[in-house]
Image 1 (cartoon, rainbow, N blue to C red):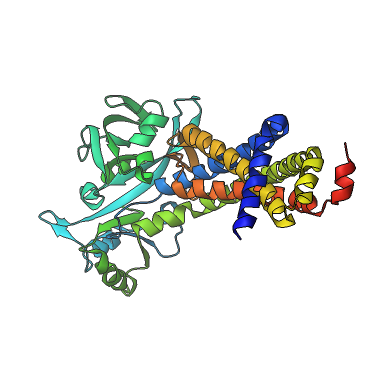
Image 2: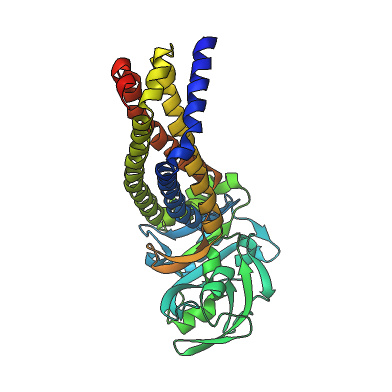
Length: 396
């Protein structure tokens, strides 16, 4: 066994020492693999970032209530009486001002992007006084919160970054109304950072919504109170509603786009991987062809076929890991944290988010590179092992 390992080490070291003589082909193969990894990580970091933007950490004790059958806030509708029944349901947390429940209105407006000047859809949400207490991750980082009854708005950090006219102190015209931006808020890099908020009653009047709402966000007494809250609402004959935890609701809203991006990313990476695989095969076959006599000499000296096969595989794997590491590093520095915006297909509104190159994504990319390296080295390794020693020694 020790002799076998010694042979593997010796042949592998010999193969690696000849790489400078084949630097053109070797470099092309490594660059191809690096490109595959970079594209794979870059595309899937979009999905990872969007999923992060649509997630809410620690929101297991916040529930979202919509009308039964609605798949988003846009298609939901609740009356004032229904929202009161929801706020008074068992399991809702309370403070000195009453139930921690916010009846909300959700409309879509058009604003010009800072980068291009073209209009895009932006979520405009009307909320009640309890909204900030319900969503504990929302923090005013500039200015102040809006005053009830006034045409004032606070803007998510992502929306302020992406759209023109949303700086604190500016006034924007929406429809027939003028609105003053009085604050900017953050929300744990979540979906709320892509929205504008104002007083729900003011928004109802501005958009002719009467006394209707589309959702209720409720802070529960504890995460375990969700089942009690849901049971009370879904069994109430005066209500026809669906209830979900906030995190689950937002995950469902992002599922269509993230699935598409992930499938698209894997498809593109697979197509590039096929090209890189052929490049790796060509490189390894060329390496075998230029070392025919050397390999035959080693075999004649007593080196077994197994060490030869393994040494070629290790060389291919080394090139793949090198290319994969370069591609992963390039993708991390190029994409991680990059600010962008895309459309949420459930609401057809813009969602601001940041690309996220996660450790799991980098590991997956390196596995792609390893797979390419192993397959790319397998067949050339078998050819080297099966090479007739006498015929190979006669080659010049």
